[in-house]
Image (cartoon, rainbow over all chains, first blue to last red):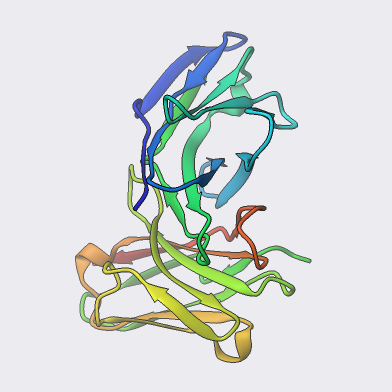
Length: 114
Length: 114
């Protein structure tokens, strides 16, 4: 079985400051790793994913995440945030079995202040 | 490809009533997933289909819940004898045969049981 822990329920940050949203996972088998973003009253949108290969993955809007196998972490970072980045961010793992079921963390609310 | 559609967006019902939600996945996606999300939590897996076959159900899915996907196209999720604890956002997602691309989520149906 897999589980995901997002250590911070809310992260307030000023605009243009850097941010890191933490994610740790637990699994006895290899997994795929994902970050999803949820804007108010909307569904979840895939932000980025780690499948294999380079441990650093990037999204088109400036976010990046680094897979660290030894620490079982997949932290999300952005060097300079915008007001529009205010949203709920969910880390998720998917086992490589036939279901590809996603297991989500409890989410981190990123609040960007001017 | 218009994405994943869910209907209705909002549903208010009295305790004890039955409700049914509909999900229309992306047409070429053979997998369809239902999740439930309560306030301040990440989505929790309920069940998934591959084509018309329901392959896994979570223990969260009590006997009052039933899901179908006739002909492997749209899916319905029915809750019988609703309880206040059923109040949540019900999310539908679809994906292609493997998990490498993650899911595409719908905007969800918000159920309020009064």
